[in-house]
Every structure is written in structure tokens, then in C-alpha cells.
Image (cartoon, rainbow, N blue to C red):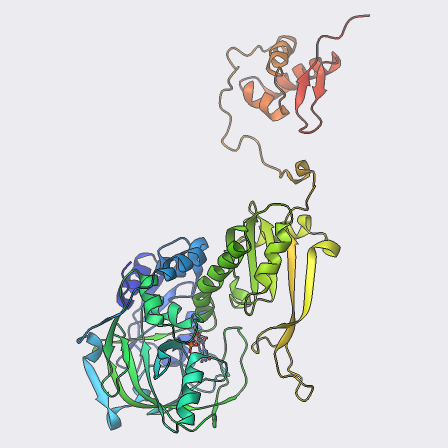
Length: 518
Ligand SMILES: Cc1cc2nc3c(=O)[nH]c(=O)nc-3n(C[C@H](O)[C@H](O)[C@H](O)COP(=O)(O)O)c2cc1C
């Protein structure tokens, strides 16, 4: 897999997933155009800016599959398989991202074509930034953080939720010093996935990214601090998070839930240098779809791992995008008795997951109609639904209204799971689905030469065929060159002679000996 941003863009173009917009566009229309496009868009010319814009490149499971080299159904499994094989980054000394270097007063963030993504956003947001920081004890950290443009040299940085960056910043703040910070924009999705993955503090996300990409991520030193950033980046912002604490307004922002979050109070990132390729492409990660699909592989991967830990064979796992690829999780399992419920319990423990549906492995969990049928016909609501109150949910779930002054500000919610596997002990013949006969047309049957055209003679041949139990459709198929009407008449001969028997479990016909004449 080519782990370069430009190679990934080309791969999307080749797959028909990304198309160029060649006419000049007003930056203000970019977000709406991407939101209504079935494909990712590459805006070659943005009026008044020197930089092209690409957006929507992670906006579907198919595109995530292209970045992980697999079918979209396998992105979770592929993620866990690859992230296990960590691969140390490699430091390089040259990169196109150093073709243009602007330091100090030359820095002007307004030169970047950063679009307003959603109507109620507090301003243009850098959404695809991979923020790199370092702590004397924990080492290097990379994560994805949104940045609201404030001035030519400042952005807000959202550090309200727990993150390693927040931890590093709190430690720097305690020491009364700014936290050096660098933001890489336009990196290969393996870097973005690794950065967004909630790995324990002290994990080098670039090692994880190397595992995902199957090759070392190349890093290059910043111009104005000692941080190392992906050399393949299109644009790098260098600077520091000021030691002012959570004092400045930031937001609102249309978040991964698809809802617009509140104003937050956050620190400020002061930008001391910008470096970029001469022909840089600015990547505007579109909300909420791209951020959702970006976190689907890690969540689905964790789900496979949780099932495996519970000793259950997971056949497929799916985190649907309308729930932010976070809150709802479907799994199809190869069930042994009782494992439907065990799987529900295992998956309900995963972070942010609020609703779980577990099906048997014959259900295509990616198909909404198949899921509907599983819920309709495999679930006995009184027995198969579990609701567990008081579990930890997410602040970003608007149905959780924090109860200020009532003892807890924790985002508590209920989790609910449905065991939509066929109930144990069911008569499986009741789950035999309708299939249409002769989908491939009529072909000559086995016993078909020559087929008598006379019902009485045909009845004898059919009787011989029924030496093994058969469905009526098999009779139609085997004597295919006879007209259906002749076959039905021959059938009537056998029935009137009292010769047709039934196998009750399958419904197949059997043949009885000739009825004795009185
Ligand atoms: C595109 C994108 C934007 C994100 N923005 C933020 C953000 O602004 N603040 C935040 O706390 N987490 C944000 N996240 C989630 C973090 O990237 C994620 O929790 C990551 O694990 C944090 O890394 P860290 O714990 O190593 O600092 C974002 C994720 C993505 C994919």
C-alpha cells in the first residue's frame, strides 16, 4: 500500500471515488458541495486562494476500504491485524513540505483555504490536523484535534475531553510553560486513523500508523521547535499552546454526531511557522461523515477483539454511520447456544457504544432490510432485549442532559442490547426463506430423455424419481422438457392412486407402493 497522501488521492481518483472540480469556486460553497456529492471533491481552483482544496476523501466505507486495502466489510478486522505490527517511524531531513517556509510575522493562516463547514460553526475550522506534542515523561503524542481560526496566527484548540494532549498541556501549565505543538494537514489516512485511535498515553501513534501502512512513517523536524511531523504532509503549522488555560471561547462546531456542539472554553494555539509544499492541497475533512468513517475501523476492530476475548466467533461487525460509527454496533456471530447474549454483553462494554444488535452469521448486517427482518422474526422482546441503566455514555450524545448540582456531572445513560439470533431450540424449518425457482431459466433435467408426454406414463417415471424424497420443484426441474401442465396431471395420477407420501420435517414427497385394489 502506498502510504503517501497524494498516492491515496490518486487511488481514489482511479477508483472513481474522487473527482476534480475544475471551475473556480467560492470557498464558502465548498462544504455544501461536498455534502451533496456522492464522490469526494478536489477543487483545483478556489477564488482568491493559491491552494487547492480536497474534501470528502474518507467519506464512505468504500474509501476506508481503499485506504486499508480491503473490502469495506473487513475494515475493522484489517485495522486490528495491521495495527498489531507496529513499525517504527524513520527520520528524514528533506521533504516537499519544506518547499515554502514562513516564520513569525510571515505567518498568515487566512491564506489557507479553510472553509466554514457547518452553518453554526464559530468560524472556519481546520478539521484534518494531526497535532503532535511531547511530554518529558510520556514522550511523543499524536492526535486529531479541531482548530478554529481566530487570527492570522492563532487558532482555538479543543481540549475539553480527556486526551493525552490535554494531559500534556495540564502538565506544561503546572510548570508554567507553553506546550510546543505542531499540526500536520494532508497526511495519509493511516496516520489519521492511528492519531484518532485512543491509544494509552506513551504510545507512539506514528508506530501504529506504520503498522497500518505496512511501512515506516517518515518524520521530519519542525523549523521552530524539536517536534517531528510526517514528512509527507501537505502543510505543517508549528507553534505552541499558550499557558493560559481554558479561557477563550471556542466553538460552536458541527461534531461527529451530526449535531452542533456548544461554545467551549479552551486554550489557544499560537502559530510561529507554516511550512508547505509549493503546490500544497489543503485537506478539509468534511463533517460529520469523514470523522465518523475514520473511527469505524478502530471501533469495529475493538468489537472483534471483545468477541474473541469472550470466546465468540465474530463473522462481521458494523458500526453504522448515522450513529457516528460510535453509538450503534451490529455483529453477526457463529453462535453456539447462549452466545447471542454473551456477545451483546461483550459489545455493550465498549466505549461510547450505546446500542448493540447481535445476529446469526446468515444475516447481512450491512443490509438494513436484512437487519429489519432479523429484528422482526428473531427477537422476542420480553426475553431478548437488555437495558442497563447508569452506564457511562458520551457528553456528545444530546439525549444525555447533565444534571448540574445533583451530585454527578458524568454523562450517564442506559445501554441497550438486542439478541437478534434465532432463539435456542427453534424449529429451523420455520426460518427457511422463500427462494424463487428457476432463477437461471429452464435447463434439461437429469431424467429428461425422453420425457413421456402422456401423464400416466410420466407418473411412472416420477414415481421412480421419488425413490428419494423430493420437493415438487425438483420434479419440475428434473422433468423440465415436459410441459408443467403434463407434470401436474401426472402428479394428480399419483395422488389419486394414493401413492404420494410426505416427509413431515422437510415437506418433501415420497412414493408409496401401489394401492391394492379391493
Ligand atoms: C477529525 C477528528 C477531530 C477530532 N477533534 C478532536 C478535538 O478537537 N478534541 C478532542 O479532544 N478530540 C478530538 N478528536 C478525537 C481525538 O483525536 C482522539 O480522542 C485521540 O485519541 C486523541 O489523541 P490523544 O489522546 O493521543 O491526545 C478528533 C478526532 C478526529 C478523527
